[in-house]
Length: 220
Ligand code: DC
Image 1 (cartoon, rainbow, N blue to C red):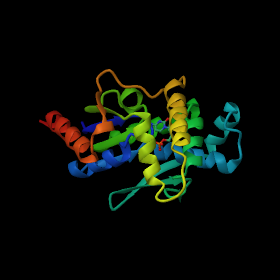
Image 2: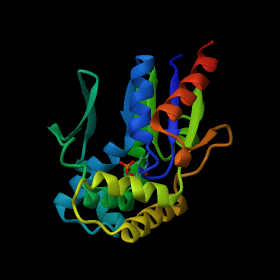
Image 3: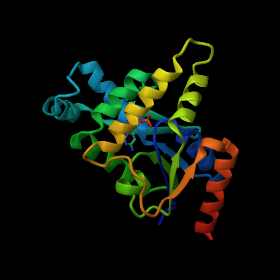
């Protein structure tokens, strides 16, 4: 049995930074499942399909193959063999991923891939439904959250000198939360056996430390 750590939570809670650090400390693989949903979203955006049209999206995704590759410990996402790791990091693709991830055809394809990876490696996997649906028997489950205001401020800091509208960023975050939490299949939710960590008043180091403590208790 491999050690699987699931980290779920809303957009902007710091999941990927923290999951990557925890994985590095433990010598585990880091799997960013949001990147997989983003890769499918990029494929759909390129195809010009209407993201509200479930039948059309379900047909299109049959031609879409997402896979992962690791180079020097860094995850790369391949879309039909093309490395799209850089291209998927835009708000447009993030919003399209939130919209297209509501469909079973999209979720089933990626859930299968995520389970295959977890069966082969010690890993830290982050997403929205890892503890609830993808890996219900994960060794450790974390639900990482922060207030919408804190998450908006963190996003704004990432704008690095570019003009931004903090209230608009917060509204976008709340809208994305609402969609991710209220979709019919695998909505974002805290698993019953997940440890909830609110990072609003915590530094990255403090959160990493807390998760490492919990992981050590599991490994013992
Ligand atoms: O974590 P992220 O911002 O890269 O994720 C983009 C979108 O993908 C997110 O709004 C919802 C979807 N997603 C999902 O439905 N399930 C996951 N396990 C990961 C992401």
